[in-house]
Length: 207
Image (cartoon, one colour):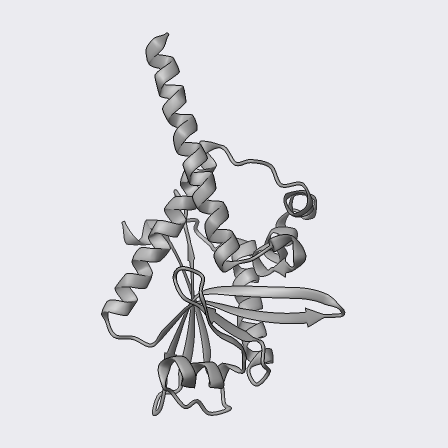
């Protein structure tokens, strides 16, 4: 009985710590998610409108198992970012796009935007997803999220809708056009013509 109590106590301690880390990270990078519609919200709504609405307006504490899955995704995303940075690529992590559609505030947070300047002039979006088993085809919600990111980046390209934060959440650039932000952060000059490609990989691909 004592061993069981100790085990449950440790599980509760870990869950509490992971919950605190998740809340701190969300506040630093995503802000108050109840004040806007995110691309992941739109993707979830496509699969189950009722569940998406409930998660938005009636959030419930996550179980330890759920927190571990979410945190594993964050750890994996961090590892991918380090791998890309080690290659000297021009990467914009967690690029934020702020938009309004018919008065509804929308925000997209793109995991990684890879930018190649002249003579290639290519923008690539990498959205990282954590999964226990790689599905035969991408989930509709993930595809919708990614396509929304692509469309929003293209639509807002020359609008002051882009912001970028450091790893600790410190605001580096705010309300810039995409070319302005790339010039300020990466020193790249971009033309007005766009070439957009989207990739999606799950954790299983890298095992």
